[in-house]
Image 1 (cartoon, rainbow, N blue to C red):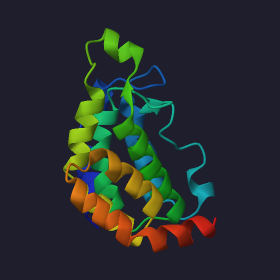
Image 2 (cartoon, rainbow, N blue to C red; image 1 turned 30 degrees about the horizontal axis):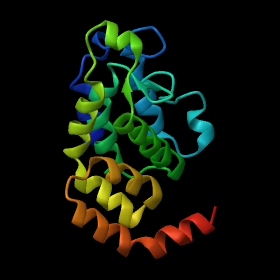
Image 3 (cartoon, helix red, strand yellow; image 1 turned 90 degrees about the vertical axis):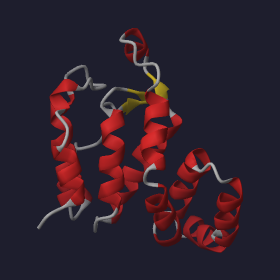
Image 4 (tube, one colour; image 1 turned 60 degrees about the horizontal axis):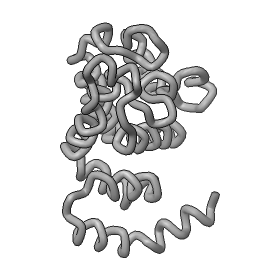
Length: 169
């Protein structure tokens, strides 16, 4: 089966990007594949993006091409834990800033690049807000949505759904 997420993933030479772990980002595709294929959290133990794409919202070069892969992944059937991990990662990427090592390498604009890439998938995030993880999706939209009236209308319409999700934790 053809997967938009895998096609987007394979478009990039990940070995050419810096990673938060100190190596090249050549191992990032394996993390995506594990998360996309995982049926349970046990299937993806050890496969996470924190410490690689970002460390405490401090971004690394590999974060930029990861954003469209995350967006494409969110369009696929995913286990709930994998979807949640991708959304939280996306939230960190759109709210972060360049790590000091990236600043030294001249990549001070990583947050803006992630922001722009995320805006390309604005409706993917709105879809997630109305049918998935409302809280994390709204948090992302609060950052990337430039149409304040649209965001306000969606947030108001989703308050009951959000309250139910928060109560169910």
